[in-house]
Image 1 (tube, rainbow, N blue to C red):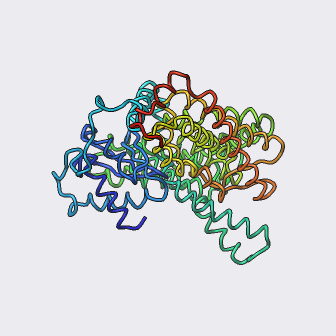
Image 2 (spheres, one colour; image 1 turned 180 degrees about the horizontal axis):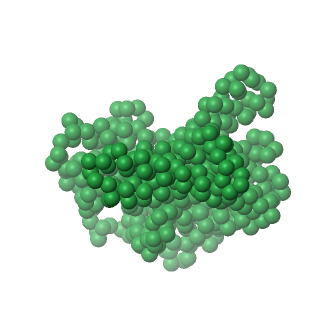
Image 3 (cartoon, helix red, strand yellow; image 1 turned 90 degrees about the vertical axis):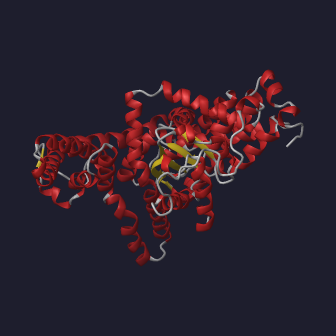
Length: 499
């Protein structure tokens, strides 16, 4: 979208989330605008969902508005400009619904079979599931995910450049350009530990630059001269796992030192102690341990696909949608990143992406089965393009999850697609992704395959088609009981007009 359109979307969103005074943080990931809100009761969720640019909303530790990969960065930038003191003075908060969009209708007077009611039901189910699953371990996983989400745009860009470089090299074209693309695609990955360290310290309440400084020890070329546990270290040993551990240690060292040091000496002593002790711990412990863990992750993924690819794909593809529903799928980013660092691609992402294929097939079946429900069919029509590109939240929370059984049949489709891709890996044709973030059709430019790009596209495309078909058939024949069909397919449920 143009800057004008992005600004218009930001201006429409701002009053519906309580105004500038209600926002204390603004970030974004691949598809979602993430807002830290002071009072969530000021949010007009129904009016937000009614905005054409909004694909859905998600309530988590931050309030998340799904805008899609093409719009989210631009809208986030425009919203930040609106929040600058000159543009949004203190006290400028507007009550929810004050933007002239009509506000939210009272849920009690709304037909329970409309798309709006279903989306509300999906949000309630999701919130209840999150509350039941808000264990310390899962909350920690979400915090770890917050470290890696900001890195995804760079991972995607570098991954596509790496794929382009590989294609040119395989064709024997433009060797000088291929040589130049190497540093462009690999520079970020060679220093990713520094960014992980910076974000880790920021997420856990330390000084970000100190976290980055301690983590930078891991990628410094001079570590090759250091001997630990009877072996010389290798630059980059331990990768993002080591960087994460080193930065976490730095956060605790900083807090401990700051409590003991007089305020007058804090600016000198605290950074020195943090970098010194954190760096030495990284050299003489963390790099070795994290290196073993990273190696085990790589060997484990390779072994899993080689010896049990079909079963592994079935399980991973089938269970990924529940992880998305709980917001825990981002916790897999460190594993994907480790595999990309070690092997050049992650073999797990193409399998997990099949969950979205099952969801698309399921949504098409719902569309055909509920031919009288014009409201829900309109939601599906608007959400399907995003679903084909791997943005599944609108279909999850607006269609499949609130309907109940279709969410299960969508998982069946994901399991079938995952089994297809996993079986191909078990037979020796392993397809991976050179970056993380996109799925669906958007993943094609990032594919890497042991037998070439065309083979990878064929395996991945076959998995998508399998997921579409299985999700469609499972939903069409088993996704509805007679009672649910009678409830949701009655002509009166959509105003009496077939869509």
